[in-house]
Structure formats: structure tokens, C-alpha cells
Image (cartoon, rainbow, N blue to C red; front, side):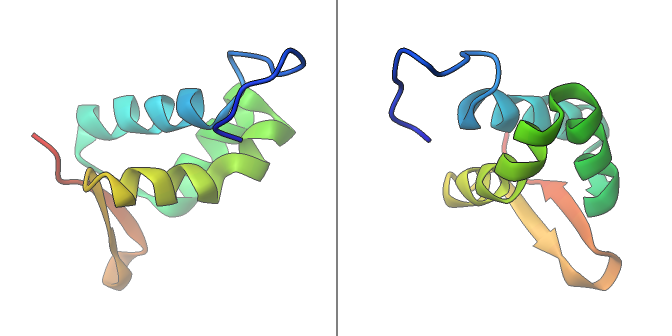
Length: 79
């Protein structure tokens, strides 16, 4: 989903959902996984639900987030 095509909605793709997650995490630093998923589902619908895990993986690979098992939380660790 990183490669654009003429049928892709620019507001509903992996990068925009990743940016949405990043904005929410920068505000509060730590959010529960289910809470983030519900916010994305409310904002983006089924497309957000489909790309949720991929967006988290993308942010994790960039070193911006970490998963905390003990609370099922996502923590923002970027600067």
C-alpha cells in the first residue's frame, strides 16, 4: 500500500493512518492498543481497520513507537 496508484484515496492510505497514530501518541505519549484502534476505525472506517497493524509496523520500523506487553500499550519513543 506504499505504492500509489490513480485509484488510491490520498487521505486513506498507510502513511496518513501512521501520521494519525503519531499525532495522537505525541499528545499523550502512551495509549492502549484498543483505544488507538477505535479512534482509527472512527476516523477512517474499514480502511483504517485493515491498515491498522501495517501502520503500527511501519512506525515501529522507523523507531518511533514501542509495544508494552504488560499494559497492552503503545508508547511514543521518538523525539
